[in-house]
Image (cartoon, rainbow, N blue to C red; front, side, top):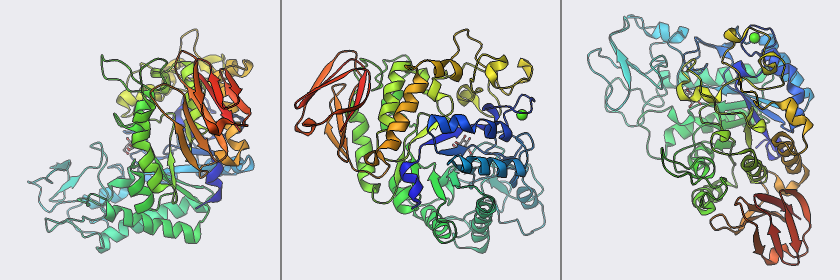
Length: 513
Ligand code: GLC
Ligand code: CA
């Protein structure tokens, strides 16, 4: 387990939307490098970059054409290596995005696998041996290629599934998990990882990590075994490298697969979802952080606690503000509500992730789809830096931008918020700094719930520290023996301590120690 993860606070960057340095309207690697001081000053000491590889961009770059080539629109390999070096100089680690489940249908491996005659790449993807029948229960395409078969999809139609074998094999064409062609796919992916680790990257966020072996069992144990194999390569050759999975089942991903961290994704009704966006179309919003929503912290805890307890000795659950696939928190929460969410996020166990722009409360925008984003596009608009043209994102003409910038006169910007000590940005900076300031707030420090009911004071202990949170619009009091002798260390809102009780003003959070 890399030691640095204990104090890591990640910042996720969607590369085309962060900063366009060469003025062509699309964010690029040099733009990210140029703004690393901002990331450092925010307090983040790690980055996750969405895919920066050569791609036709039918799914925002998750459709990779060449794993070892930087997409020309983002720059060159030399630019990426320079980004690693500049980040390291500032104490920032960089995770790239590994997409192991599928490639673009324009990848050379796939094109070779489509030929009528068998060749080295025939077994690299999941193909049947008949063009007139499909793959029961799985999406597939037939009739488009020379090869007499159908191929399986892993996501969109342009993303054929790589072949890691099938656990439960019902057809002759299904490879076994340990068949030479399935093992070759696995080795090819390890080779991609080594390529970038050797050039200075610090690990990977793994896309659809649970999707590798088809017809896997309910614990996804065959897929997990592949990741354990990858983890042993890291432990042996790259012990400082970190892996975070898009799996959202920490027991399977961490205990089973050996991932260091697993994302707590946004699934309707799960613990994360109940905190930020607990609403049904047309129905009431019961999000816990929404003031006076009637939300209940126990709905989060009922889901989170068993997962935390089962995995805490082996790895970390990663909570985030949102990511490139989900609505931004500002869609449901006000700035004051987000301040409390950040205070909570930075005082919980595990390794937190901040999605670019959430630290200033960027809106979930109403924009047309771009590059397979569909409703996700609204969370992918350009970073809002200042009030120079295009909010400081790019000097290109507005019509040439990757996505439109927020044209509202009151569009939030980082520059404005820097000036205001009470801004969301400065509150986020404060809580990230607080996290770095106490060993008891690190990823692996103990966590115990002291008090939890509805939107009454939620109190939890981290090591010897106590965190108290009141998301409601009325002052709330909590009495507890654990408060005795404590002092206020950091507060958002209002808090008064006396003997064994704390009085929290409306929408307030306090760290006591
Ligand atoms: C993951 C990515 C998403 C992508 C999909 C297919 O869910 O986060 O953006 O479209 O996988 O690769
Ligand atoms: Ca550019």
